[in-house]
Image (cartoon, rainbow, N blue to C red; front, top):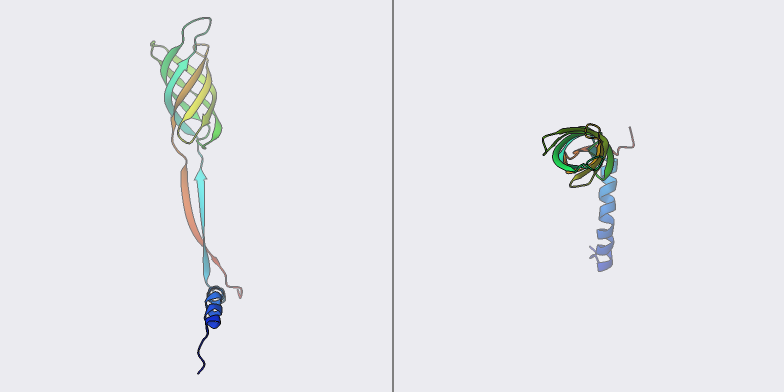
Length: 141
């Protein structure tokens, strides 16, 4: 019986992964594939706002609740909502928003108070779904 030399052992170790993959493929094995999807949905925004006064009137801070067209991160959205201003008045506004990874910034026009408004707050993060499927590698089917 002949002994294996160092070069024989090295060749065997290098060939082992290929033999393993070939045996899985020929035996009808499967390869896992993982896919992660992000569900970007319309969302609610809750935050602090500042409504700039029209015609020289002073601006007012407030709490605002808005509906956003999407909660996709690092993306723009359309928005519309209502604001309770700390001077006791209410506002209704439409505008645009930008969702960052940690906050949402809004810029809108308050139709009721006839002034521009800026807001900073939060929206619900998009949900992610991860699924794993197995690809059949059997070539004889």
